[in-house]
Length: 171
Image (tube, rainbow, N blue to C red):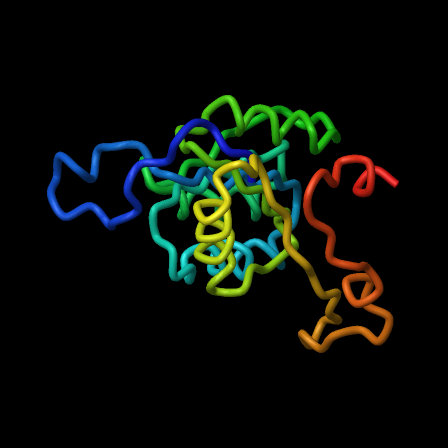
């Protein structure tokens, strides 16, 4: 999640005026015809212990069934769906959502991925403890259709790196 300036306080808004302020984290989710994965992905955002977020879903011209589900999610300002003509280029959908983002941090979530409940809490906490860091990434696990970890999960074979890691990440 990239960092943009000093983040405001992380408390959950308690008044209507406070609820109109911008969220700290914008979650960007591109999607195309992923109906079977969308609900668990969206639910994993809603289940976050850190609650100062907005979810922007960029639909890349999905079929009618996927669009019907996405229409049930569209609830500005917390959850917004951007309707795009199909391009077949997830980066275009991500960028369209990014242009609509209001958060000081941006978190990317693919529509077939699921976050653990404390993901945002831990990342925001880490970034705040280390203000010199401008972004972070997390480990992951590859699971099968029954949510069981696959044997050779790539996350287990990658070392944890810190400091100036751009070159290490690109390798």
